[in-house]
Length: 65
Image (tube, rainbow, N blue to C red):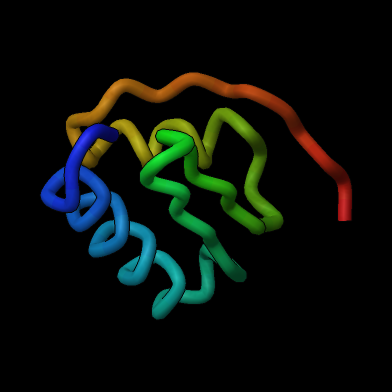
């Protein structure tokens, strides 16, 4: 993510997933170009959701709750 438009697309996507109860929480760090997602989904499922934004998705780390 390099701009507000990019982060906005990701935010809209994750907000919809949060409203469905699929995503518990998320944090977008535009300067760091990262998104942290809290969910009971697998990493692959989260990556599939984020890929729908049209942005490149790369797994950096997984931290159990």
